[in-house]
Image (cartoon, rainbow, N blue to C red):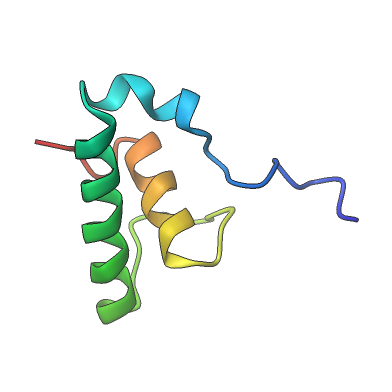
Length: 69
């Protein structure tokens, strides 16, 4: 097992809770951004911790690279 793992999903929902007032809005934003990442194969993160599009979208939102309206 890799000791550098940050749990099942980084960042956690607790870290993202203050990014929007609604968990539904957060889920929708992550899903939309993940689809954009899948289509474009690009991310705003220079050294992401995740490899999959959902994880990348979560990281981008956590780091304020993507803002939720």
